[in-house]
Image 1 (tube, rainbow, N blue to C red):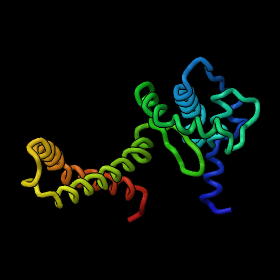
Image 2 (image 1 turned 90 degrees about the vertical axis):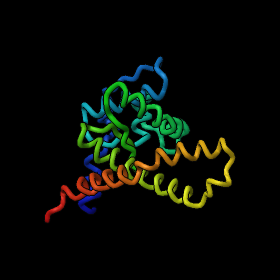
Image 3 (image 1 turned 180 degrees about the horizontal axis):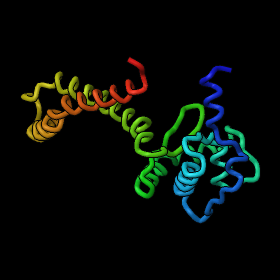
Length: 181
């Protein structure tokens, strides 16, 4: 087993870890997921809950369901709403690790590294796409309504290169922080 694999295994919540968790079945599923992630972030910071273990805890099952169980997929589909609830109520983000599971962020530094940097990269790609699309449109050929819309979009995009530069510089510094010179 590699060092990364053993590190990952030590950061996985087991069904035994969540045995004491009690969910409120009267709450909507996304709130139950958010409350579970909050509980896990306090009790087991930075530990990842496989989706089937989260389902066991949130649904109050005695046994851990299979990853192919339909409720596991249903719970996974609520993570976007759970993220908004977690952000509003607990100032935490949802961290999804593809193929592994989910957890709540554990503080500002963790939120920055796991959420903000990723979103900055998404913003960067979106800004480039808007710029490329704008470059192939001849504004003279647009209707007055479309021209007005294009003007608004271009006004918003005018600040994107500087914003993108600041975000990428910041993201680069964050990823370089752990490296030795």
